[in-house]
Length: 279
Image 1 (tube, one colour):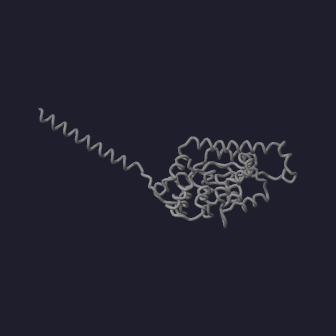
Image 2 (cartoon, one colour; image 1 turned 90 degrees about the vertical axis):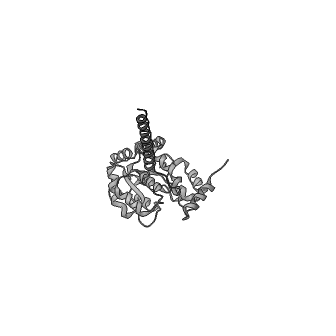
Image 3 (cartoon, one colour; image 1 turned 45 degrees about the vertical axis):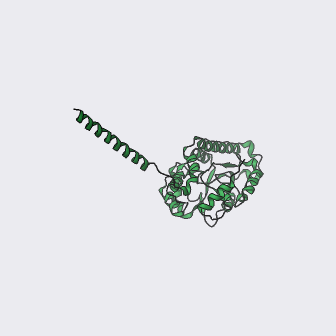
């Protein structure tokens, strides 16, 4: 009996060890490891995907946008405008990526595959038409539409992405989306020409974006110090005419750190380290 008990105990121990091994290996295989190349982007992407604080900031931005739109709709405030402006139809000019559409899944895939931004992957993501809405944006833009305010989507997506972009905007539930009001990049990234085109027929009540270049050419390709200074110059417009969405994943704020140069990932890491302010 003792011999059988020893054999049984040994068999159970072996089975337990084998099971533990396979569970450990299986778990290790399932848990993705972030390659070091783009690891610095992980926190920003997780912030936008997992932080309730990010959602709160997005809702806050669109609550502000609605309050400011309502203030403009108030007849008492209209009297403060020049007579030529009073009868002009209203418009909202809004960026798309990370302002209307959440592209964080594409960013997450880029991180895990160690693939820096490239047109092929970006176009492929757009063709999926799967980007979700930034919190609060659908409710605000449809409210604006209900008040006969024209919405113009001004994005630096490429023209080849236009139909997929229109489809995605419709998929999230927006009511006013067409080829006429989705204004993608043609020759230049600056949005000044598109803004001027809108202003020929409309009075832009609000500009909304996640990047300072969405608001004014004064921020374009400026140094960090200059961007700070230009931001301070128009401090009274933030939360009134200019509504900013948080974007910790990417943007010209990062390009400014690199001096708008095309650098290797290693050089970028050096610039980021050098930019840190220490006690």
